[in-house]
Length: 71
Ligand SMILES: [Zn+2]
Image (cartoon, rainbow, N blue to C red):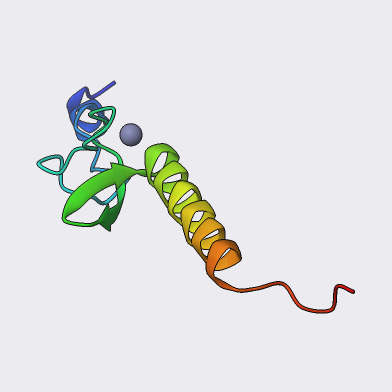
């Protein structure tokens, strides 16, 4: 057997396609998926931020909009 082919597999390309210099600002994960407010977030933390933000917007919306249709 010729051992040269093994060296190709020893250095796999970045499967996530993202530069490792960007890290999640919450957990430090290099698997950054989103940039929110100038900070980078991985998928897990990013979705949490988005959900929290959406929840806050909904709360503000509920507080400012007077519910109609009630007697
Ligand atoms: Zn994270």
